[in-house]
Length: 126
Image (tube, helix red, strand yellow):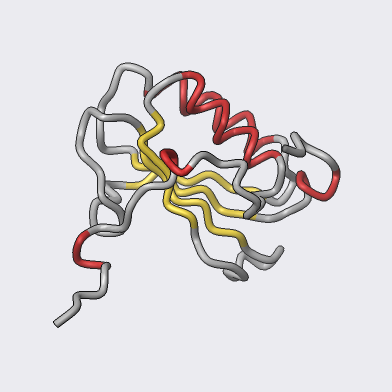
C-alpha cells in the first residue's frame, strides 16, 4: 500500500470519530489517527457523539469512525467508508496507513476494519 505519497497525502477527507464509547485502546488509536490526519493538508478529524445510527457498533469493542472523501471545499465526492472496530494498535496503524495513502479502494484496508451499516440503514427484502 502506498503509505503517504504526495497523491495520497493531498486527498481531502473528513474523518468522523465516535467520541462516546470508552475503551482501553481508544486514546492510542485516536493518537494514531490524529497523526495520519495531520499529515494531510486537506484532512479534518471530527469527534462526535455515538455513530450507532450510521454503523453497527457495540460499546467497548473498539473505536468506530467514518471516513468521507471530499473535495477541498469539503463537499463529499465519493462514498463514505464506515470503519471499526479499531481495537488494537495494529488496527489503528492499518487504518492510519490507509488514510495516509489517500483512502484507496484497492483492498488494502482489511474487510474486518470496515464496519457494517446500522440495521436501519440496510435495505430490507420482502
